[in-house]
Image (tube, rainbow over all chains, first blue to last red; front, side):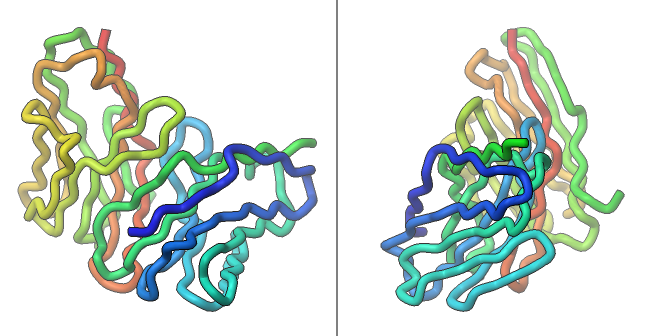
Length: 111
Length: 114
């Protein structure tokens, strides 16, 4: 599975959009981009995943560049409850085994 | 609650004791995963099951660790002769074996070895 690079930490003002970048320059054609987050002392929570096209669900939007070498997770209106560590992971979807989490981005939403 | 559950949520034990953790996955999920997480790090894969078969084990899973999923439903993770380095959060996740395989995590069991 390809490796990812994320900033160690970011701040975002409450009510603003939080844009979390992820670089995955060695991604293969059959690897998906997954995003998880982990709120302090809880298990990771699935947010969204995508292959090529941009994706949106009730939690977030995922924007994948045309060359697929990077992506951005967008939380459209950040709240204090979005303060968490966000992990960007790439993986071949149908292998179905482990995720490699890395150290993620610690997002702090500021009142 | 139809999510992944783990018990106990916290466990404090003395070095050298054995501990066992339990994970109950989402009922229709046939894949079950165990991860370990230490402070400041992301979760690290330990092992996973499809139904009752243990399909992969990480080299992190030393001989003192054993996991079972006897009936393809709940799973247990046992650590024998605990060491202080075993102190961590132990996370369980489950997924379907089709589609995009996103994993759903439980709240974890926090182990402290004194």
